[in-house]
Image (cartoon, rainbow, N blue to C red; front, side, top):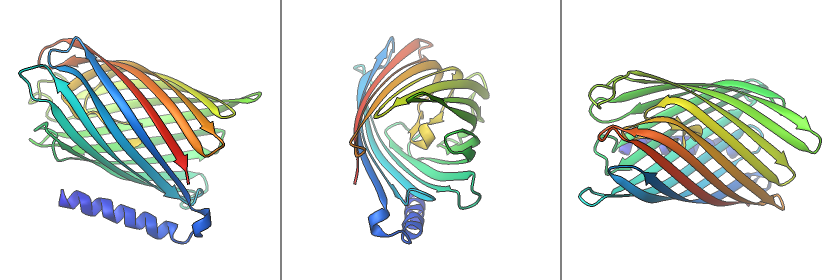
Length: 288
Protein backbone atom coordinates (compact mmCIF):
# COMPACT_ATOMS: atom_id res chain seq x y z
CA UNK A 1 0.00 0.00 0.00
CA UNK A 2 2.77 2.44 0.91
CA UNK A 3 4.62 1.66 -2.30
CA UNK A 4 1.47 2.29 -4.34
CA UNK A 5 0.85 5.58 -2.55
CA UNK A 6 4.41 6.66 -3.29
CA UNK A 7 3.82 5.84 -6.96
CA UNK A 8 0.57 7.83 -6.99
CA UNK A 9 2.23 10.83 -5.37
CA UNK A 10 5.16 10.64 -7.78
CA UNK A 11 2.91 10.65 -10.85
CA UNK A 12 0.79 13.45 -9.39
CA UNK A 13 3.88 15.50 -8.59
CA UNK A 14 5.12 14.98 -12.15
CA UNK A 15 1.83 16.21 -13.54
CA UNK A 16 1.86 19.26 -11.26
CA UNK A 17 5.44 20.05 -12.30
CA UNK A 18 4.66 19.74 -16.02
CA UNK A 19 1.50 21.80 -15.69
CA UNK A 20 3.34 24.33 -13.55
CA UNK A 21 4.63 26.08 -16.65
CA UNK A 22 1.07 26.78 -17.74
CA UNK A 23 -0.44 30.13 -16.70
CA UNK A 24 -3.13 29.59 -14.05
CA UNK A 25 -5.79 31.16 -16.29
CA UNK A 26 -5.22 28.60 -19.08
CA UNK A 27 -5.13 25.45 -16.91
CA UNK A 28 -7.98 23.14 -17.95
CA UNK A 29 -9.77 21.53 -14.99
CA UNK A 30 -12.64 19.04 -14.99
CA UNK A 31 -14.50 17.13 -12.28
CA UNK A 32 -17.25 14.52 -12.49
CA UNK A 33 -19.36 12.40 -10.12
CA UNK A 34 -20.70 8.97 -11.12
CA UNK A 35 -23.44 6.90 -9.52
CA UNK A 36 -23.79 3.25 -10.59
CA UNK A 37 -26.35 0.52 -9.93
CA UNK A 38 -25.56 -3.15 -10.68
CA UNK A 39 -27.93 -6.10 -10.89
CA UNK A 40 -27.08 -9.79 -11.31
CA UNK A 41 -29.53 -12.22 -12.88
CA UNK A 42 -29.26 -15.99 -12.30
CA UNK A 43 -26.28 -15.66 -9.96
CA UNK A 44 -26.02 -18.15 -7.13
CA UNK A 45 -24.20 -15.62 -4.94
CA UNK A 46 -24.72 -11.99 -6.01
CA UNK A 47 -27.91 -9.95 -5.89
CA UNK A 48 -27.11 -6.31 -6.70
CA UNK A 49 -24.83 -3.45 -5.72
CA UNK A 50 -23.84 0.16 -6.21
CA UNK A 51 -20.75 2.27 -6.77
CA UNK A 52 -19.88 5.93 -6.28
CA UNK A 53 -16.97 7.47 -8.19
CA UNK A 54 -15.30 10.87 -8.10
CA UNK A 55 -13.12 11.78 -11.11
CA UNK A 56 -10.92 14.80 -11.75
CA UNK A 57 -8.46 15.92 -14.42
CA UNK A 58 -6.30 18.93 -15.18
CA UNK A 59 -3.75 19.95 -17.77
CA UNK A 60 -2.76 22.56 -20.31
CA UNK A 61 -5.22 21.28 -22.91
CA UNK A 62 -2.41 20.66 -25.40
CA UNK A 63 0.45 18.44 -24.25
CA UNK A 64 0.11 17.42 -20.59
CA UNK A 65 -2.78 16.02 -18.57
CA UNK A 66 -3.29 14.28 -15.23
CA UNK A 67 -6.36 12.20 -14.30
CA UNK A 68 -7.37 10.74 -10.94
CA UNK A 69 -10.38 8.82 -9.64
CA UNK A 70 -11.53 7.18 -6.44
CA UNK A 71 -14.40 4.68 -6.44
CA UNK A 72 -16.29 2.89 -3.67
CA UNK A 73 -18.12 -0.33 -4.59
CA UNK A 74 -20.58 -2.38 -2.51
CA UNK A 75 -22.04 -5.72 -3.68
CA UNK A 76 -24.91 -7.46 -1.89
CA UNK A 77 -24.62 -11.25 -1.71
CA UNK A 78 -27.27 -13.83 -0.88
CA UNK A 79 -27.75 -14.71 2.77
CA UNK A 80 -24.97 -16.96 3.97
CA UNK A 81 -22.28 -15.03 2.10
CA UNK A 82 -20.50 -11.86 3.17
CA UNK A 83 -21.16 -8.69 1.19
CA UNK A 84 -18.22 -7.17 -0.65
CA UNK A 85 -16.81 -3.67 -0.17
CA UNK A 86 -14.05 -2.37 -2.41
CA UNK A 87 -12.15 0.87 -2.95
CA UNK A 88 -10.39 1.61 -6.25
CA UNK A 89 -7.79 4.34 -6.82
CA UNK A 90 -6.64 5.31 -10.32
CA UNK A 91 -4.07 7.85 -11.47
CA UNK A 92 -2.80 8.51 -15.00
CA UNK A 93 -0.60 10.97 -16.89
CA UNK A 94 -0.91 11.72 -20.63
CA UNK A 95 1.68 13.37 -22.87
CA UNK A 96 0.49 14.37 -26.33
CA UNK A 97 2.73 15.84 -29.00
CA UNK A 98 5.83 16.44 -26.88
CA UNK A 99 7.68 13.27 -27.89
CA UNK A 100 6.45 13.49 -31.50
CA UNK A 101 3.76 15.73 -33.05
CA UNK A 102 1.54 12.70 -33.74
CA UNK A 103 2.27 10.55 -30.68
CA UNK A 104 0.27 10.29 -27.46
CA UNK A 105 1.70 8.45 -24.45
CA UNK A 106 -0.42 7.57 -21.42
CA UNK A 107 0.83 5.81 -18.29
CA UNK A 108 -0.83 5.15 -14.95
CA UNK A 109 -1.68 2.85 -12.09
CA UNK A 110 -4.75 1.34 -10.41
CA UNK A 111 -4.90 0.12 -6.79
CA UNK A 112 -7.58 -2.15 -5.26
CA UNK A 113 -8.45 -2.46 -1.58
CA UNK A 114 -11.11 -5.16 -1.26
CA UNK A 115 -12.82 -7.74 0.96
CA UNK A 116 -11.94 -10.27 -1.75
CA UNK A 117 -8.87 -12.12 -0.44
CA UNK A 118 -7.47 -12.91 -3.88
CA UNK A 119 -7.46 -9.36 -5.25
CA UNK A 120 -7.12 -7.24 -2.11
CA UNK A 121 -4.03 -5.03 -2.37
CA UNK A 122 -4.10 -5.63 -6.14
CA UNK A 123 -1.83 -3.42 -8.21
CA UNK A 124 -2.30 -2.67 -11.89
CA UNK A 125 0.01 -0.63 -14.10
CA UNK A 126 -0.96 0.34 -17.64
CA UNK A 127 0.34 2.28 -20.60
CA UNK A 128 -0.86 3.27 -24.04
CA UNK A 129 1.05 4.54 -27.07
CA UNK A 130 -1.08 5.96 -29.89
CA UNK A 131 -0.19 7.47 -33.24
CA UNK A 132 -2.90 9.94 -34.21
CA UNK A 133 -3.91 12.39 -36.89
CA UNK A 134 -6.38 14.64 -34.98
CA UNK A 135 -10.00 14.24 -36.07
CA UNK A 136 -8.99 11.85 -38.88
CA UNK A 137 -7.64 8.50 -37.61
CA UNK A 138 -5.52 6.86 -34.91
CA UNK A 139 -3.88 3.52 -34.14
CA UNK A 140 -2.27 2.36 -30.91
CA UNK A 141 -1.47 -0.34 -28.37
CA UNK A 142 -2.49 -0.45 -24.70
CA UNK A 143 -0.67 -2.77 -22.28
CA UNK A 144 -1.69 -3.60 -18.70
CA UNK A 145 -0.09 -5.76 -16.02
CA UNK A 146 -2.05 -6.86 -12.92
CA UNK A 147 -0.39 -8.24 -9.79
CA UNK A 148 -2.64 -10.10 -7.34
CA UNK A 149 -2.12 -12.35 -4.30
CA UNK A 150 -1.22 -16.07 -4.50
CA UNK A 151 1.16 -15.35 -7.37
CA UNK A 152 -1.62 -14.47 -9.81
CA UNK A 153 -0.26 -12.25 -12.60
CA UNK A 154 -2.29 -11.05 -15.57
CA UNK A 155 -0.85 -9.55 -18.76
CA UNK A 156 -3.13 -7.77 -21.23
CA UNK A 157 -2.46 -6.41 -24.72
CA UNK A 158 -5.12 -4.27 -26.39
CA UNK A 159 -4.43 -2.99 -29.94
CA UNK A 160 -6.92 -0.38 -31.13
CA UNK A 161 -7.70 1.80 -34.14
CA UNK A 162 -10.17 4.63 -34.73
CA UNK A 163 -11.49 6.61 -37.67
CA UNK A 164 -13.45 9.91 -37.87
CA UNK A 165 -16.16 10.67 -40.44
CA UNK A 166 -17.87 14.00 -41.08
CA UNK A 167 -21.56 13.65 -42.02
CA UNK A 168 -22.92 17.14 -42.51
CA UNK A 169 -23.46 18.62 -39.05
CA UNK A 170 -22.69 15.27 -37.45
CA UNK A 171 -19.38 13.60 -36.72
CA UNK A 172 -19.01 9.84 -36.43
CA UNK A 173 -16.14 8.12 -34.66
CA UNK A 174 -15.62 4.39 -35.23
CA UNK A 175 -13.24 2.29 -33.15
CA UNK A 176 -12.13 -1.35 -33.07
CA UNK A 177 -10.28 -2.78 -30.08
CA UNK A 178 -8.87 -6.25 -29.55
CA UNK A 179 -7.98 -7.91 -26.24
CA UNK A 180 -5.42 -10.60 -25.53
CA UNK A 181 -5.24 -11.64 -21.87
CA UNK A 182 -2.71 -14.10 -20.44
CA UNK A 183 -3.37 -15.61 -17.01
CA UNK A 184 -0.48 -17.64 -15.62
CA UNK A 185 -2.29 -19.32 -12.69
CA UNK A 186 -5.52 -20.31 -14.44
CA UNK A 187 -5.78 -23.85 -12.99
CA UNK A 188 -5.33 -22.58 -9.44
CA UNK A 189 -8.36 -20.31 -9.96
CA UNK A 190 -10.57 -22.99 -11.52
CA UNK A 191 -10.19 -21.61 -15.05
CA UNK A 192 -9.51 -24.03 -17.89
CA UNK A 193 -7.56 -21.71 -20.21
CA UNK A 194 -4.44 -19.58 -20.01
CA UNK A 195 -5.08 -17.29 -23.01
CA UNK A 196 -8.23 -15.26 -23.72
CA UNK A 197 -9.22 -13.29 -26.84
CA UNK A 198 -12.01 -10.83 -27.59
CA UNK A 199 -12.99 -8.01 -29.96
CA UNK A 200 -14.86 -4.78 -29.20
CA UNK A 201 -16.48 -2.41 -31.74
CA UNK A 202 -17.94 1.01 -31.01
CA UNK A 203 -19.51 3.96 -32.82
CA UNK A 204 -19.96 7.48 -31.42
CA UNK A 205 -22.19 10.01 -33.18
CA UNK A 206 -21.97 13.67 -32.15
CA UNK A 207 -24.11 16.60 -33.21
CA UNK A 208 -23.67 19.85 -31.36
CA UNK A 209 -23.90 19.23 -27.59
CA UNK A 210 -25.41 15.73 -27.94
CA UNK A 211 -23.34 12.56 -28.26
CA UNK A 212 -24.56 8.96 -28.54
CA UNK A 213 -22.25 5.94 -28.28
CA UNK A 214 -23.04 2.28 -28.96
CA UNK A 215 -20.56 -0.54 -28.41
CA UNK A 216 -20.46 -4.30 -28.19
CA UNK A 217 -17.89 -6.99 -27.61
CA UNK A 218 -17.63 -10.77 -27.91
CA UNK A 219 -15.07 -13.38 -26.96
CA UNK A 220 -13.69 -14.29 -23.54
CA UNK A 221 -12.18 -12.08 -20.84
CA UNK A 222 -10.91 -12.61 -17.29
CA UNK A 223 -9.44 -9.95 -15.00
CA UNK A 224 -9.83 -7.43 -17.82
CA UNK A 225 -8.56 -3.84 -17.54
CA UNK A 226 -10.93 -1.51 -19.41
CA UNK A 227 -11.96 2.11 -19.87
CA UNK A 228 -8.37 3.36 -20.07
CA UNK A 229 -7.43 1.70 -16.76
CA UNK A 230 -10.28 3.09 -14.67
CA UNK A 231 -12.32 -0.15 -14.62
CA UNK A 232 -10.74 -3.44 -13.52
CA UNK A 233 -12.70 -6.70 -13.43
CA UNK A 234 -10.85 -8.27 -10.51
CA UNK A 235 -13.25 -11.05 -9.43
CA UNK A 236 -12.94 -14.65 -10.68
CA UNK A 237 -15.48 -14.54 -13.51
CA UNK A 238 -15.15 -15.47 -17.19
CA UNK A 239 -16.93 -12.83 -19.27
CA UNK A 240 -18.27 -13.78 -22.71
CA UNK A 241 -19.68 -10.59 -24.22
CA UNK A 242 -21.76 -7.49 -23.74
CA UNK A 243 -23.33 -4.33 -25.17
CA UNK A 244 -23.29 -0.72 -23.97
CA UNK A 245 -25.18 2.45 -24.83
CA UNK A 246 -24.26 5.94 -23.65
CA UNK A 247 -25.87 9.36 -24.09
CA UNK A 248 -23.96 12.54 -23.20
CA UNK A 249 -25.20 16.14 -23.30
CA UNK A 250 -22.95 19.20 -22.94
CA UNK A 251 -24.53 22.40 -21.68
CA UNK A 252 -22.87 25.74 -22.45
CA UNK A 253 -19.59 23.87 -23.04
CA UNK A 254 -19.15 23.80 -19.26
CA UNK A 255 -21.50 21.16 -17.86
CA UNK A 256 -21.84 17.51 -18.88
CA UNK A 257 -24.75 15.16 -18.17
CA UNK A 258 -24.64 11.51 -19.11
CA UNK A 259 -26.34 8.14 -18.80
CA UNK A 260 -24.76 4.75 -19.55
CA UNK A 261 -26.51 1.36 -19.69
CA UNK A 262 -24.67 -1.90 -20.25
CA UNK A 263 -25.35 -5.62 -20.22
CA UNK A 264 -22.70 -8.33 -19.90
CA UNK A 265 -22.79 -12.07 -19.53
CA UNK A 266 -20.27 -14.22 -17.68
CA UNK A 267 -19.76 -17.71 -16.33
CA UNK A 268 -19.78 -17.98 -12.55
CA UNK A 269 -16.83 -20.27 -11.81
CA UNK A 270 -18.11 -21.62 -8.50
CA UNK A 271 -21.62 -22.51 -9.72
CA UNK A 272 -21.02 -22.97 -13.47
CA UNK A 273 -24.05 -20.71 -14.08
CA UNK A 274 -24.39 -18.17 -16.89
CA UNK A 275 -24.99 -14.82 -15.15
CA UNK A 276 -26.44 -11.65 -16.69
CA UNK A 277 -24.97 -8.43 -15.33
CA UNK A 278 -26.90 -5.17 -15.89
CA UNK A 279 -25.25 -1.84 -15.09
CA UNK A 280 -26.77 1.65 -15.09
CA UNK A 281 -24.58 4.72 -14.53
CA UNK A 282 -25.56 8.40 -14.33
CA UNK A 283 -22.92 11.11 -14.18
CA UNK A 284 -22.52 14.87 -13.94
CA UNK A 285 -19.36 16.79 -14.81
CA UNK A 286 -18.23 20.36 -15.10
CA UNK A 287 -15.26 22.42 -16.24
CA UNK A 288 -13.87 25.07 -13.95
